[in-house]
Image (cartoon, rainbow, N blue to C red):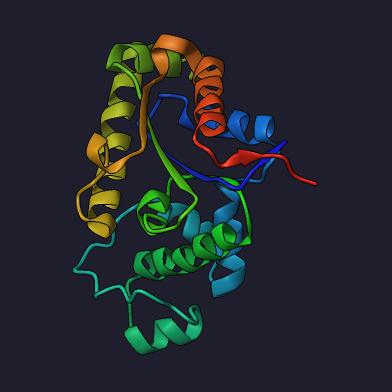
Length: 212
């Protein structure tokens, strides 16, 4: 059995979205892309991996130039021509990489506006993982061995960064259920249960079939 679905996971901080995505990829036996996209972007653009890690899922500090619908080449040439902020260059590099990954076959991609980038892909399933703030705070506090107050502070900080990043590059759609195929409260079923629900959704969606 196999799938041709490209699954994108957007998530609130502390909701377990990354772990959900990894489990979904394992159960469907398809590639999983998260932080490895930074390595791929560094290799493609020639920029420092450490610099790109600091820019990951953060919006540029000034107005973004209009993004073309097709980007043939990026990296040093694009940087020189458009004189973009580094965060814009990173986004456009990841834009091209995500398009290529989706065209190569089924996979799971976490964050990086992948839901928006692939919104017109015929086999795309977009998922948003969320959970109540108290459930997320408990999860972060237990995992990081920190106080609940510190966990809540991190939730506020990273959710604001993710929303700003996504809204900057993807027209204000982060967390809006109308822009996703599936939204799931991970605190109800837990990480494993949420992953199972997404796999079942894929199986029932008509993109899961016999492969040879």
